[in-house]
Length: 501
Image (cartoon, rainbow, N blue to C red; front, side, top):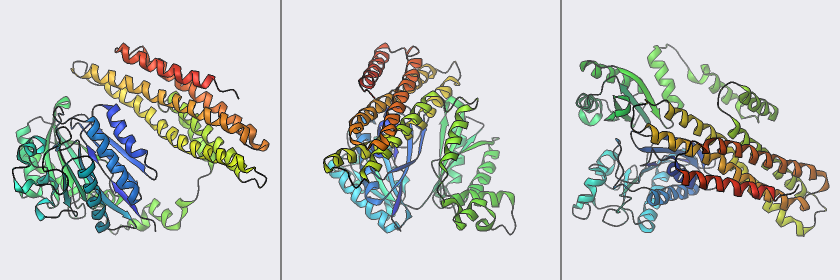
């Protein structure tokens, strides 16, 4: 079985979407990385990125996240409700398959050494990678946050880092790197805004305050919602489940005349954690998940491993576009067209490469085309989702209370992002068209129509993307930014226009 590691870097930015995308993109560009989830929170001003990759790719992607976070985030001006000591605050390695916790701890050591040496950021190893017992608990490592650590590092022997300089990085702070098992990030939102009461509830809920074992908890004020959130981490959900945590939080909240009105799961969680919640909440008797959960049975029988029929996928896309839902819309359709064009281009080039009569002089160009189309196809697939996300972010900003001071800023940021995403689609289409033009004289006559069709699809992708850029430009009040976006679009369309099919 090939080894697979999950990584969940937390970095201190949850409001500037351009920065979030730049940091996530640094990981995404590493071959072998599959992004699973990107969870941002404006109140926390934090992003939780989840991805899986083979060990070496995971290590490289985590380093690039740390590097890009150091470049873009200045903790001296960072404000947020979540405790933090670093631009990239914590990086855990989690075993998925073909690797154990000791292997993940070794990865943490290697990453910590590299971050300390190359980025000059102090690194503290925690949990299963900790070198001293006092650093097993992440909360203890992060105690005092950026400001407190800045005052102590270099003076307090207990705060000497495991790697890197014995001084705070002036803007990026410090980072905790570790290895851990799967955890559950489970937030509980109360119908009150009394932080003192929230502090009492969080203290009595967490293990360190005499509460539930394997639970960390902190009160966080959600100013925009006028609520208190009890942000918990279940470090061993089998010892203390979500159901037990929720029940105890409800009991403690009731003592303050409050209720838990909603809950949130941040990032990913194991399926078993939800199964356990259902079993406990429903008081199920004689329930056998491996037999009675449909997906478990299908997986056991191998039914879910069969390759999907492409016609079903095509039908699903057409159906999604035909509904009255706003997403997916034209921007996502543009990216879909781009991905289809690149797929056709890959096919035409790959079929030609299989020909026994192929001249060797054509082989390098065709191999380059297959690689380029594959890379661009992956980018278009990500842009499909990013376009829908951009629209939903704008609608979320629009739904904010009109008297909220930050509403105009949030709307403008969302508008800019809504224009930037299809602009990236148009630019990728122009790049794909250039690849198609270069490959046209190299492909076999039998697939020439496929390569031309690929180019037509890429031109359609650029044209559709352009419509989705233009519709957002008039609403952007920063005219310098709007003009820069317009110039970028003009450049992409001119590049497309230079390609004759």
